[in-house]
Figure (tube, rainbow, N blue to C red):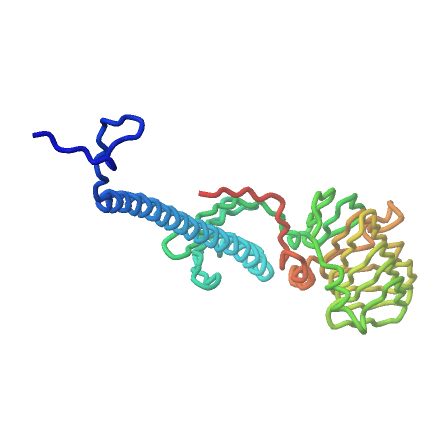
Length: 325
């Protein structure tokens, strides 16, 4: 028996088609919600992994940089220490194979090793550590020991006798570097002369050094000087008749084109220490009397001044190749 058609179940466009009643859609919505939550969870999990990996990489990068900075600090410390060692020692072989573990800051340290590779060269190996990460630097350094010479000049050196013989370095390409403001600060208030200085007293004693901004002249009545002299321009020792003179210390001229000149001396003139000139040095202005100025080499007096240099000692670092491992 055919079921009767309810007029409410008939499609208006198709009178004889029966519209099925809507089933319960809660199950479908629940499944969709679960799928949505699953994909959202996967996205959140991926973001967490990505952020964690990025944070880990940042930590690694920070520790690598800290280890590198520790190694660089170790290199600078070693070079400064080597120069300070050279203040009291004419040879560096005493620091060969030297090793030290340095504290370079919070959570970092560095192990340095020094190897002498030649009479004018050495190599520093520095390994910096930050947590479990390490960075290694090797630096090969060539140097000149200025304090090995009684006369060291960038220009000509003539009519000078050194004792011991031959302690002269002329036409030098490098000069010691100083912080001029620091030297002026140390020389003030008693031994700072911004312009010229003329010394004509018999005796002239200074505790450490005298800073002269321009020219320094020793007069004919000056016999004895004790102390180092830092001079901006020229140095002249005037001619004297029947008077000897001696200077105990080092004379350093820092401006290029400077001249050191000792005029004719009837008896003799001596300097016990050294001359470091960014220019020319002439022992006398009369060539046929060549040995009227004698420089008695004294390393202690030279290094007493050079300890104030930028490098902290008598060594000038000419080249320094470094390699990161």
